Length: 210
Image 1 (tube, helix red, strand yellow):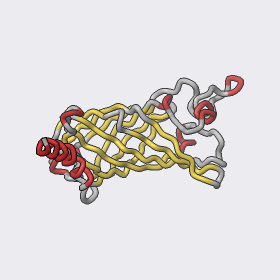
Image 2 (cartoon, helix red, strand yellow):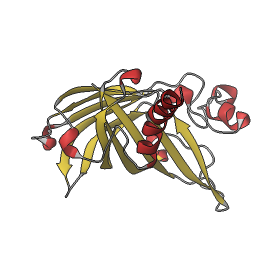
Image 3 (tube, one colour):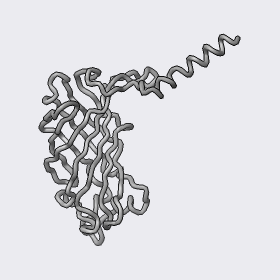
């Protein structure tokens, strides 16, 4: 009985010890990436946005439930393409009042301060990928936001790849981080200018599965 208990304890402890040692299913190893079409994992893909609030503090919010596809050939990284859709209507902050302000209609039939009550999804479609050194790339594409389409360049870093555990589907995964800065007035989002900054910093964590 004692041997059985010891064996059971070892089986439980082994994955925990491996995890603590950094042996996660995903690794920052580009050789784990295989070619093909990947689908964005909406449960693990997030875009955070940050503005300067009156010069006192930065203020953060999130977009989630993001969908899209990545077409990737590890041997031809410059040929990769990405198509991402962001549901602006699900913008989230920790303030219920601000959430309502971001999505409320304009006063007396005027334009909304920010997105309005039924904003169209934002949409990013890549037009070029330029590898930069190891595990990095500059991805340029057209972003449509608030009815306006403009070119945007993302500074992208490879984060990790590998297969998820069998209990989580056993799918191939690849993940990236990206940053960029938007000038919101260029997209017709003018609320609270200039005391809330025109520049909006974006930080993106995107997970793709195949």
